[in-house]
Image (cartoon, rainbow, N blue to C red):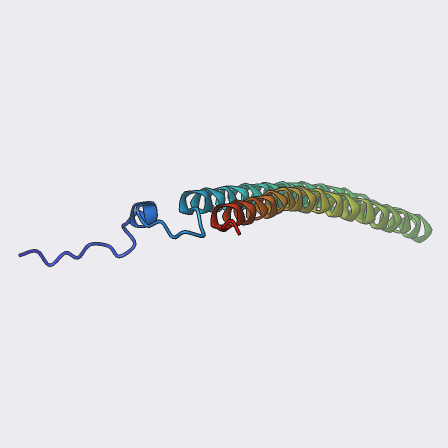
Length: 149
């Protein structure tokens, strides 16, 4: 006698409910709608992950550029120069760094906004389709359960 038990989750819900004809609902249509919901969520998740990866990659590039610029500044600062010259270079570097930081922050925000917009668009489209399906289920149910007077 085997001690192995069948996995509780190893079954097909469509087979269980396939022969069960609960009058108000079309089980197959509901399962198909749920499959489309899962597909939309999967696509939205994929878009979100791709967006996060793109943002992370860009942030790494930005960090590398910042370190390169800082290295060149430090190299320039160790060269003999007057105090006024060093202050002018340091001030110019600080100004460029602030401007660049704001521009790069704007770029990252735009990338994140675009990704969020793409994800919301997928979910919005599927939600609208789902509401149309629910209306169709309700109309079909009303037509099949209506009794002539």
